[in-house]
Length: 90
Length: 298
Image (tube, rainbow over all chains, first blue to last red):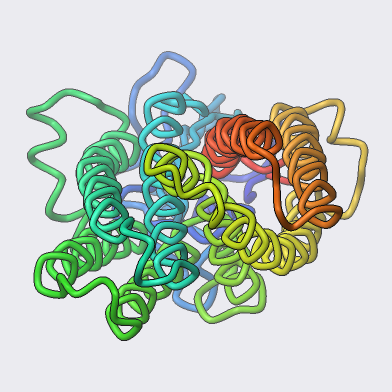
């Protein structure tokens, strides 16, 4: 995943998550909030045409702070997984 | 949320898989029986009930797959998303194909009433084989895409399980009890012998394809067998398979020793086959649970 979990760096242009199985783009989502839950992502997560296991989310420039990536993946066999991880912008 | 609706999904899949195996076994049994057996109408009715079970379970599976994908089992939420799931997702399209093929199976059962003709049985087996292909593409075997080696192996795995389990289910619950009731005990050893040979061949394919699937599911390591839900379920399934194989071997040994069975031996053979059939239902249920659980490698 990009940026990596618990990493610190400049504001990322995109969030990129690669799953172990191909996912259904229509029902797989990524959103970014700050630690308080305020949503910072406005775009919709998109699939990568050449890699059905990867979803990306374009981000606006994020001000310094801590952020949480909330992801939902629905595999092509219809199974749903969800989780979250944090990263920090300097 | 990782196991959202796991139990109802596994139960619906178990009903569907048991109906599928039962239908496969009943149609095969019609090929193994002589036209004078007097059991063909009973086989046809039982196959119809299996197909109805598959249809109902299939509709429930579409609902549950939609609920799982959207993370909400409420009727209003599912109703709003069921069409996008069925028409736009891989699993949804295949569940729709499963329902269409099940309806074709029911239609064929309604139209082809001449069960003594072998062409009827072969046309039903063709529909069931097409259902196997659709089902192989809905599970973990399709994780790396369609028309891959794992999916191809899974088609053979599903057909061989259906032949193995279905033959035992048809024999234990329909054919042998029917022969006993009709006091045609003389035909039991001949039918059981043909059944045993069919099952032995199917079992060889089950073991080979099952070993391949298990190796993939475990990620090439035996460690998850003890540490993950998927591994523990696989342990239980293997134990049940050993139990079923042992019962089948006991019956085969009895048949091998003596082709003209006594009344007592016929009764023992039927009882063992019935217990084996119940074990088969347990194997199909655990298999459905496995198919709906995240593999040890995820």
